[in-house]
Length: 393
Image (cartoon, rainbow, N blue to C red):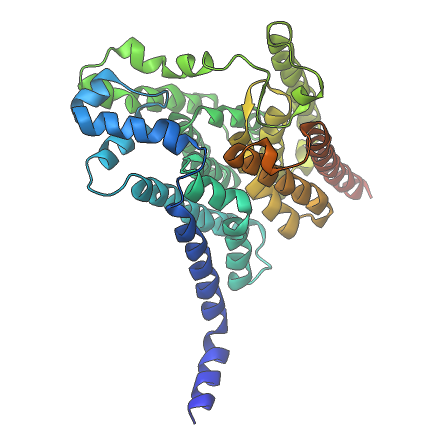
């Protein structure tokens, strides 16, 4: 009797039970990592001293005097966390984890918009995939980083672009930027979308400086100089004068002379985007919603591949959403997704535990990272070409 009732309920609610179990396991993974802070990480080197500063001087004086090189919104979070009686690692980790689950919801909405043939449970399962990409829980729970925050707003920007609500898309991009400067990697994507979408108006760009100015007001109200507030990112740019900063991009292959190559690599990246924009513009008629998603991933990946001073965490958006894209939209991209996941785990492990923990040379990892990029680029190009040919038939 009891077995029959149990099996009946399982048949009736098996999708909900399975999804609930998956979410439960994803939470257990993150909870198990939260308290491990005896590794090399920004949490010990920066976040603890910054929170100690806010606890010592208070929120108002802390925002007035300033600490660290993050912009004001994340500093407001740090200031509030410092006033709790909790160990810093708990609210910091929970903050990043919260945005991971918000990203799952946002990704579900994107899949509902672009993969209507998939049932709702399958879309949810596909969305939950990002929670089990190793970089996601290593970044938020173990490293206590805020990459999940700014990438959530990038993903929301993609969602609103697909809905052709370009005003909200620009607002989401602007919010992402005030949390982390690396949101600038999305600029080429937005420019290409502007070129091919007539409803994307140039005046939408006003939200970018407007939100940036508004985001700095809490520190200015507390008494900090406006110029000091609004040039925080400029100070951040001056902090690293090396071509290679942890991400095994093209710089690892001998392009390490910062003084002579810094501007050359930036210009090279601009040229690559210029050619791509030209290609996209002349194939605008075949660029569909799925291709726009892959284009957003490709733009961030290209920045990570060619720009100097790229850190291990900067390809966070690429690793997560290329993985899902390869599974759901284009399985020919799975080799790229597998390679970039392996490389990213090696990068994180090397950072946490030192080079002795991973007996693999960067001279080997960098070509793998580049191979993943080249294959992904080829797949993106081929999908456009094939659709163009099918239109002619």
